[in-house]
Every structure is written in structure tokens, then in C-alpha cells.
Length: 225
Image (cartoon, rainbow, N blue to C red; front, top):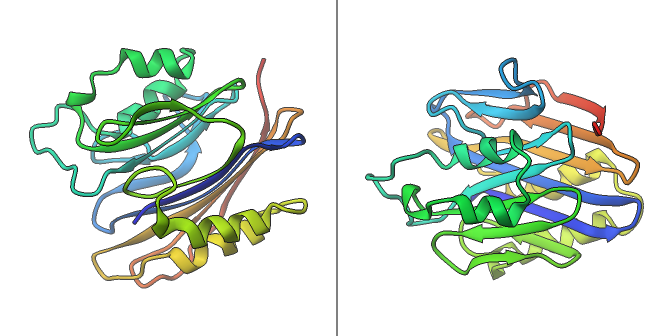
């Protein structure tokens, strides 16, 4: 199960805090997080099979992440779900306007989180439509938002951000939810901390099929504009 836990405007000094596990087949080719050479404003990992991304940010302060909706696969889907993340990050549509522009039937089942400097939205083409999120902490897996199976992860996350949050404790939040299996498992964990003054920390830690930790990628930048 993919996992995203986040805090949206819970702390005045840190408007967005995210901790996420990406679970995927180990055989599916992907690049680790980096600023894309062909889209230099985007910082994200890259799915080399379909060209999309699962979670990323832009230099202008936009955030997007997608999870598959369990049981929502559609072999006739015209587009990869990862394109939803990329197209939001490379444009300047407000989240609700971007959602309105989509044809949900073009994709297999998904959950999509979108934020700019002003708003955060959740959108699913299988459950619940679109909703603007109030300030608060949220958790998302492969079903709807804030379902019971992620309650323990949300509690660990809430405990970790009660005081000034830092990178390693947020990785510790994710560790109990990592999946270790030969064919399918947690490919990487990501922590994002966006500060009110525009400074952003983005850290990704990869894992192989044996669960061995790879080289951590760390990025820090100030929001443009």
C-alpha cells in the first residue's frame, strides 16, 4: 500500500509537511528524485515506463502526489496516472481549475493531492469526487482519504510534528509501513518540509528488493517568485 501522511497549515511556520512511501513493482524502471533536465522547475522521481511521477514539487511552491486506487485498474485507460502529477507541477492552474480540466475516465482509479501556495485539494475518480482540504493532518493510501488502515501512521506522524519536525524522525514514521517482498515493495520514502519563508527541503531514500537502503538524495531550495 502506498502511503502519504501530511500536515497542511497545521503549523504557521511550516505550511506543508509530507512523509510518503512509494510502493511499486521492483521491475518497473524509475529514476530517483531530481530536477528534471527537460522540466527544470520540477523536482520529482520519474517513472521511466510511462514518463510520469508519483510525488513532486515545483520551484514555484506547487505540490502534487498520486496513489493508485486499489482494485481500480482499467486496461483501457488512455493515460498514465503519473501524468496527473507532472501536468499540475508544470502549469499554474489553481488546483480546483486543474481538477475541472481533467477527464477522469481517461485514467485507472487514482487519488490525487494537489496544493499551491493557497489551497490543497484531494480528488479521486473512484470515491468522493474533489474536496478542498481545511488546515489539518491527513493520510492517504490506496483507498479513500483518512481510512482506518492508516490511523497508526497518522498518529505517528502527528507525534513527530508536535515539536519542530526534522527529516529523520519523519522517515521513522514511515518505516513500520514499508513493504518488503521480492517482486513488489517500498521503492522509496520521501520527506518534504516547506517553510513559510519559501525554503523547501525534499529528501528521498530508496530501497532495493531486499530492503537495503540506497543513497539518500537531499535537495534544498527557496521558492521562486
